[in-house]
Image 1 (spheres, rainbow, N blue to C red):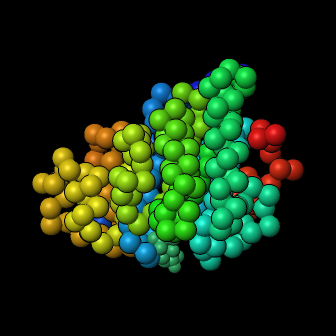
Image 2: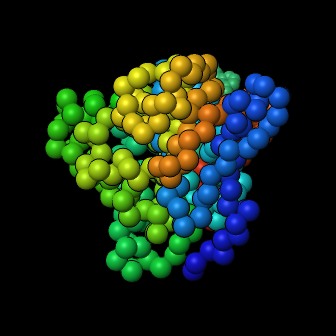
Length: 262
Ligand SMILES: Nc1ncnc2c1ncn2[C@@H]1O[C@H](COP(=O)(O)OP(=O)(O)O)[C@@H](O)[C@H]1O
Ligand SMILES: [Mg+2]
Protein backbone atom coordinates (compact mmCIF):
# COMPACT_ATOMS: atom_id res chain seq x y z
CA UNK A 1 0.00 0.00 0.00
CA UNK A 2 1.33 3.45 -0.89
CA UNK A 3 1.67 5.95 1.94
CA UNK A 4 -0.13 9.24 1.64
CA UNK A 5 2.58 11.83 1.83
CA UNK A 6 1.84 15.30 3.07
CA UNK A 7 4.39 18.00 2.24
CA UNK A 8 4.88 19.40 5.72
CA UNK A 9 4.73 16.12 7.54
CA UNK A 10 7.65 14.98 5.45
CA UNK A 11 10.14 17.66 6.36
CA UNK A 12 12.61 16.60 9.00
CA UNK A 13 14.62 19.35 10.67
CA UNK A 14 18.30 18.45 10.46
CA UNK A 15 19.55 21.48 12.38
CA UNK A 16 19.63 25.28 12.16
CA UNK A 17 21.32 27.80 9.91
CA UNK A 18 24.71 28.42 11.54
CA UNK A 19 25.05 32.11 10.65
CA UNK A 20 21.53 33.00 11.86
CA UNK A 21 22.22 31.09 15.06
CA UNK A 22 25.55 32.81 15.73
CA UNK A 23 24.62 36.31 14.59
CA UNK A 24 20.97 36.73 15.61
CA UNK A 25 20.44 33.80 18.01
CA UNK A 26 17.72 32.85 15.55
CA UNK A 27 16.63 29.29 14.83
CA UNK A 28 16.19 29.04 11.07
CA UNK A 29 15.53 25.37 10.30
CA UNK A 30 17.39 23.42 7.68
CA UNK A 31 15.08 20.60 6.77
CA UNK A 32 15.11 17.63 4.47
CA UNK A 33 12.35 16.09 2.41
CA UNK A 34 11.63 12.48 3.35
CA UNK A 35 9.06 11.81 0.62
CA UNK A 36 9.97 9.45 -2.22
CA UNK A 37 10.11 12.50 -4.55
CA UNK A 38 13.69 13.11 -3.48
CA UNK A 39 16.64 10.99 -2.45
CA UNK A 40 16.60 10.92 1.34
CA UNK A 41 19.68 8.76 1.76
CA UNK A 42 21.82 10.64 4.30
CA UNK A 43 25.62 10.72 4.61
CA UNK A 44 27.30 12.05 7.77
CA UNK A 45 31.05 12.66 7.46
CA UNK A 46 33.71 14.25 9.62
CA UNK A 47 36.64 13.38 11.79
CA UNK A 48 36.28 11.50 15.04
CA UNK A 49 34.62 13.70 17.66
CA UNK A 50 32.94 16.01 15.13
CA UNK A 51 29.44 15.03 16.27
CA UNK A 52 28.30 12.40 13.75
CA UNK A 53 26.92 9.90 16.25
CA UNK A 54 25.27 12.67 18.27
CA UNK A 55 23.41 13.89 15.19
CA UNK A 56 22.59 10.33 14.16
CA UNK A 57 20.83 9.72 17.47
CA UNK A 58 18.81 12.92 17.10
CA UNK A 59 17.82 12.18 13.51
CA UNK A 60 16.98 8.59 14.41
CA UNK A 61 14.45 9.77 17.01
CA UNK A 62 12.92 12.36 14.68
CA UNK A 63 12.58 9.81 11.91
CA UNK A 64 10.92 7.32 14.26
CA UNK A 65 8.32 9.95 15.19
CA UNK A 66 7.73 11.09 11.62
CA UNK A 67 7.41 7.62 10.14
CA UNK A 68 5.41 5.61 12.69
CA UNK A 69 4.73 2.89 10.10
CA UNK A 70 8.32 2.67 9.03
CA UNK A 71 10.87 0.09 10.08
CA UNK A 72 14.31 1.12 11.29
CA UNK A 73 17.39 -1.07 11.56
CA UNK A 74 20.48 0.12 13.41
CA UNK A 75 23.96 -1.12 12.45
CA UNK A 76 26.59 -0.19 15.01
CA UNK A 77 29.94 -1.48 13.77
CA UNK A 78 32.12 -0.03 16.53
CA UNK A 79 29.79 -0.54 19.46
CA UNK A 80 29.99 3.18 20.15
CA UNK A 81 29.09 4.39 23.67
CA UNK A 82 26.56 6.76 22.09
CA UNK A 83 24.46 3.74 21.12
CA UNK A 84 25.04 1.38 24.05
CA UNK A 85 21.49 2.07 25.27
CA UNK A 86 20.23 0.25 22.16
CA UNK A 87 22.18 -2.96 22.81
CA UNK A 88 19.21 -5.10 23.84
CA UNK A 89 16.93 -3.99 21.01
CA UNK A 90 16.02 -6.59 18.42
CA UNK A 91 16.89 -4.45 15.42
CA UNK A 92 20.22 -3.24 16.84
CA UNK A 93 23.06 -5.05 15.03
CA UNK A 94 26.53 -4.90 16.54
CA UNK A 95 29.99 -5.41 14.96
CA UNK A 96 29.92 -7.97 12.13
CA UNK A 97 26.20 -8.64 12.71
CA UNK A 98 25.66 -5.37 10.87
CA UNK A 99 25.90 -7.48 7.71
CA UNK A 100 22.72 -9.34 8.70
CA UNK A 101 20.91 -6.01 8.85
CA UNK A 102 22.22 -5.21 5.38
CA UNK A 103 21.00 -8.58 4.07
CA UNK A 104 17.50 -8.08 5.49
CA UNK A 105 17.18 -4.57 4.07
CA UNK A 106 18.68 -5.53 0.71
CA UNK A 107 16.32 -8.52 0.41
CA UNK A 108 13.38 -6.24 1.13
CA UNK A 109 14.58 -3.96 -1.66
CA UNK A 110 14.79 -6.87 -4.10
CA UNK A 111 11.32 -8.13 -3.10
CA UNK A 112 9.86 -4.70 -3.77
CA UNK A 113 11.76 -4.31 -7.01
CA UNK A 114 10.55 -7.67 -8.33
CA UNK A 115 6.94 -6.84 -7.48
CA UNK A 116 6.72 -9.67 -4.96
CA UNK A 117 6.27 -7.07 -2.20
CA UNK A 118 4.00 -4.15 -3.07
CA UNK A 119 4.32 -2.40 0.30
CA UNK A 120 6.08 0.95 0.41
CA UNK A 121 6.24 1.73 4.11
CA UNK A 122 9.65 3.31 4.70
CA UNK A 123 12.53 1.00 5.60
CA UNK A 124 15.64 2.72 6.96
CA UNK A 125 19.03 1.26 7.73
CA UNK A 126 21.16 3.52 9.94
CA UNK A 127 24.81 2.43 9.84
CA UNK A 128 27.42 4.05 12.08
CA UNK A 129 31.05 3.91 10.87
CA UNK A 130 30.28 2.10 7.62
CA UNK A 131 33.62 2.94 6.00
CA UNK A 132 35.65 1.57 8.93
CA UNK A 133 33.86 -1.73 8.49
CA UNK A 134 34.39 -1.84 4.71
CA UNK A 135 38.09 -0.98 5.05
CA UNK A 136 38.53 -3.74 7.62
CA UNK A 137 36.72 -6.21 5.32
CA UNK A 138 38.95 -5.22 2.41
CA UNK A 139 41.92 -6.51 4.40
CA UNK A 140 40.30 -9.64 5.79
CA UNK A 141 37.83 -10.77 3.11
CA UNK A 142 37.98 -8.88 -0.19
CA UNK A 143 35.16 -10.89 -1.74
CA UNK A 144 32.78 -10.15 1.12
CA UNK A 145 33.80 -6.48 1.05
CA UNK A 146 32.86 -6.33 -2.60
CA UNK A 147 29.46 -7.99 -1.96
CA UNK A 148 28.73 -5.54 0.87
CA UNK A 149 29.66 -2.53 -1.29
CA UNK A 150 27.48 -3.80 -4.15
CA UNK A 151 24.46 -4.24 -1.90
CA UNK A 152 24.89 -0.80 -0.38
CA UNK A 153 25.25 0.69 -3.86
CA UNK A 154 22.12 -1.05 -5.06
CA UNK A 155 20.14 0.39 -2.15
CA UNK A 156 21.54 3.85 -2.90
CA UNK A 157 20.67 3.56 -6.59
CA UNK A 158 17.20 1.97 -6.32
CA UNK A 159 16.03 2.82 -2.82
CA UNK A 160 14.25 6.12 -3.39
CA UNK A 161 11.28 4.88 -5.42
CA UNK A 162 11.01 1.70 -3.32
CA UNK A 163 11.11 3.59 0.01
CA UNK A 164 14.29 1.98 1.24
CA UNK A 165 16.74 4.46 2.77
CA UNK A 166 20.30 4.47 4.07
CA UNK A 167 21.63 6.80 6.74
CA UNK A 168 25.36 6.29 7.12
CA UNK A 169 28.18 7.85 9.06
CA UNK A 170 31.87 7.60 8.25
CA UNK A 171 34.98 9.71 8.47
CA UNK A 172 35.77 9.80 4.72
CA UNK A 173 33.47 8.40 2.05
CA UNK A 174 36.11 7.36 -0.50
CA UNK A 175 34.68 6.69 -3.96
CA UNK A 176 36.24 3.22 -4.03
CA UNK A 177 33.61 2.02 -1.54
CA UNK A 178 30.73 3.19 -3.72
CA UNK A 179 30.72 1.30 -7.03
CA UNK A 180 28.79 2.65 -10.04
CA UNK A 181 29.08 6.19 -8.73
CA UNK A 182 26.41 5.37 -6.16
CA UNK A 183 27.77 7.97 -3.70
CA UNK A 184 25.96 10.60 -5.77
CA UNK A 185 22.66 9.20 -4.55
CA UNK A 186 23.02 10.60 -1.06
CA UNK A 187 20.45 13.38 -1.30
CA UNK A 188 21.67 14.75 2.01
CA UNK A 189 25.39 15.15 2.71
CA UNK A 190 26.51 16.54 6.06
CA UNK A 191 30.18 17.27 6.79
CA UNK A 192 30.69 18.09 10.45
CA UNK A 193 33.51 19.69 12.38
CA UNK A 194 36.95 20.95 11.43
CA UNK A 195 37.44 21.38 7.72
CA UNK A 196 39.32 18.58 6.02
CA UNK A 197 40.10 19.92 2.57
CA UNK A 198 40.17 16.53 0.89
CA UNK A 199 36.62 15.72 2.05
CA UNK A 200 35.34 19.02 0.69
CA UNK A 201 37.17 18.44 -2.60
CA UNK A 202 35.64 14.97 -2.78
CA UNK A 203 32.06 15.89 -1.96
CA UNK A 204 31.66 19.59 -2.70
CA UNK A 205 33.96 20.41 -5.62
CA UNK A 206 31.58 23.11 -6.92
CA UNK A 207 31.44 25.05 -3.66
CA UNK A 208 35.08 25.95 -2.99
CA UNK A 209 34.42 29.69 -2.86
CA UNK A 210 31.45 29.45 -0.49
CA UNK A 211 33.40 27.30 1.96
CA UNK A 212 36.75 29.07 1.76
CA UNK A 213 37.97 30.40 5.10
CA UNK A 214 35.10 28.97 7.13
CA UNK A 215 35.79 27.17 10.40
CA UNK A 216 33.51 24.69 12.11
CA UNK A 217 33.44 23.37 15.65
CA UNK A 218 31.96 20.12 16.84
CA UNK A 219 28.25 19.97 15.92
CA UNK A 220 28.69 22.55 13.14
CA UNK A 221 29.39 22.06 9.46
CA UNK A 222 28.25 22.02 5.86
CA UNK A 223 25.12 20.45 4.38
CA UNK A 224 24.51 19.78 0.70
CA UNK A 225 20.93 18.99 -0.27
CA UNK A 226 20.16 17.17 -3.52
CA UNK A 227 23.60 18.03 -4.88
CA UNK A 228 22.82 21.71 -5.29
CA UNK A 229 21.67 23.50 -2.15
CA UNK A 230 24.46 24.44 0.27
CA UNK A 231 23.88 25.38 3.92
CA UNK A 232 25.99 25.88 7.01
CA UNK A 233 24.47 24.07 9.94
CA UNK A 234 24.35 24.16 13.72
CA UNK A 235 23.29 20.94 15.42
CA UNK A 236 21.53 21.91 18.67
CA UNK A 237 21.90 20.15 22.01
CA UNK A 238 19.31 17.46 22.62
CA UNK A 239 17.24 18.83 25.49
CA UNK A 240 15.58 15.63 26.62
CA UNK A 241 18.06 12.84 26.04
CA UNK A 242 16.05 10.33 28.06
CA UNK A 243 12.98 10.83 25.86
CA UNK A 244 15.08 10.71 22.69
CA UNK A 245 16.57 7.39 23.76
CA UNK A 246 13.18 5.92 24.64
CA UNK A 247 11.84 6.83 21.19
CA UNK A 248 14.82 5.11 19.55
CA UNK A 249 14.46 2.02 21.74
CA UNK A 250 10.77 1.76 20.85
CA UNK A 251 11.60 2.14 17.18
CA UNK A 252 13.94 -0.86 17.26
CA UNK A 253 11.58 -2.93 19.31
CA UNK A 254 9.23 -5.25 17.46
CA UNK A 255 6.54 -5.12 20.09
CA UNK A 256 6.17 -1.34 19.88
CA UNK A 257 5.85 -0.90 16.13
CA UNK A 258 4.28 -2.75 13.25
CA UNK A 259 6.98 -5.10 11.98
CA UNK A 260 7.59 -5.21 8.28
CA UNK A 261 10.80 -7.13 7.90
CA UNK A 262 9.28 -10.59 8.24
N1 LIG B 1 25.78 19.24 18.60
C1 LIG B 1 26.35 18.87 19.75
N2 LIG B 1 26.06 19.54 20.89
C2 LIG B 1 26.64 19.16 22.04
N3 LIG B 1 27.52 18.14 22.19
C3 LIG B 1 27.84 17.45 21.09
C4 LIG B 1 27.27 17.78 19.82
N4 LIG B 1 27.77 16.92 18.91
C5 LIG B 1 28.61 16.12 19.59
N5 LIG B 1 28.65 16.41 20.89
C6 LIG B 1 29.48 15.72 21.90
O1 LIG B 1 30.80 15.60 21.37
C7 LIG B 1 31.36 14.33 21.60
C8 LIG B 1 31.75 13.68 20.28
O2 LIG B 1 30.61 13.52 19.47
P1 LIG B 1 30.32 12.21 18.62
O3 LIG B 1 28.95 12.34 18.09
O4 LIG B 1 30.62 10.97 19.39
O5 LIG B 1 31.40 12.36 17.45
P2 LIG B 1 31.75 11.36 16.25
O6 LIG B 1 30.65 10.35 16.15
O7 LIG B 1 31.86 12.21 15.05
O8 LIG B 1 33.06 10.74 16.62
C9 LIG B 1 30.32 13.55 22.37
O9 LIG B 1 30.64 13.61 23.74
C10 LIG B 1 29.01 14.28 22.12
O10 LIG B 1 28.13 14.17 23.20
MG1 LIG C 1 30.74 8.28 16.21
